[in-house]
Structure formats: C-alpha cells, structure tokens
Length: 282
View (cartoon, rainbow, N blue to C red):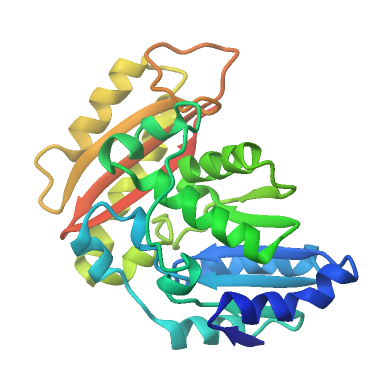
C-alpha cells in the first residue's frame, strides 16, 4: 500500500494495470474513514485487480466555510483502516492545487434537475463541486468501477448522471448504508458528536422506520406531519428538511403511485453538525 500525493505519481503507479487491462476499482472519500467506507473498499477489493481510495476534503462542495474548516481530518487513522487489505491498494491524497491544476473552482453542470432537489435547495453549488472533483478523479484514476454509499443517495444519482454527461466508461456501484448498532447511519461527521448527542441522534433512524412502517397506511401529507411532530421542540435535533421522493427523479412526492419507488430523506442539525439519512419505503 502506497500513498500518492500527486496525480503524476498515481498515474505512473496505475499505468501497468491499465496497460495490462487489469480492472481498477475506485472509492472516493473525504477521509475520516469508518466501517461504512471500509465496506466499500472491501467490495471494490473483491471485484477488481487493484483499488484506489482517494482521501481529499474537497473545498468546492462546501457552501459553508466553517463546515469545511471543521470537517474531520484523520489521515493516520485512515491509513490504519486500509492496512487490512491484501490486494493492491493505492491511497490518493493530493493537495487541492495539484488536483485542480491551480484552478480551484467548480464547473457548472445540468444534472437533469436532480441537483435542484433536497440537498441542492439547501447547499447551493454543492453538486457542481461534487461533479467537478469526481470528474477530475475519474480522468486521473480511469477506474472500471466506482463505489459509493447509499447514505448520500442523491449524490449517488448525481454521479451516475455525471458519467453519462462526460461519456465515461465507468460503472457506478451503489452500496448499502452501514449503520451503528443503534441504527444511526455511519458518517464522518459523527466524530464531531459527543456521547449524549450520539444517543439523541438515533431519533433520525427511528423516525425513518416509523415512516416506512406507516407508508402504506398514511398519506404523504400525514407522514410529513408525523415527522414534524417527532422533531418538534426536540432539545437536540433541529429538522432542516424531510421529503419523500421518487427514487428515479428525486422530485418531492405529493401523492403515492403504485408504479413508482419512493425513499424518505432527512437532513437535520445536532450541536451545529449536519446529518443526513434516507430509507427505501417500498
């Protein structure tokens, strides 16, 4: 396992794999690795001849400078998480100047409206930043497959659209959400929560389960009211949004259709930390 700090170094290391038509798996991360990330690397490791794991906190996808500043950076810990793998593992941890070739700015994308829903409403420019950085990574790594978690389900759909737009021969693999024993979705941001906040944050998962359990019984309007009631006057959690959306378009659902698949999405704040989660409903 070797850490590459520059694009040129990584390209040189991967050249024999590309030349010999070996498969490359790619797991993009912003570091602060946890078991959820490790599960992505495990799947990539099984399905490919080598795996590239990027560790890079991307500045162009943060609309809040303070959030960027506070995002956990734990590179030594991250390396320890990856030492267990026996196959060829390459860690790519470039500087922003190297990756962006001294132009740290986002390209503007049209993701067929997906970028305007949910996270797009609350984090202006976020998905342009995601699309830009992943396009850069894809062109450097040249992976056959890229692995992303379903916790960021909207991002997963954005990335699938990105490879269509850029006409890249990459298969995007969505992997299940990995949860704590309590049900809380694993996230790098969880590291910023204290024990009491972690305990209270379980409300997110419990609320999603309630929505799933009542999806066939209640209208979408009633389900929205159920969620608002769960979060109302809560001492720790503040709901930013809850939406039930069509899985394909991610457009907010008003009425249910038997022909469509739906997911419930939540974003909330606890102790100044923003957490998101989602769950398939039918």
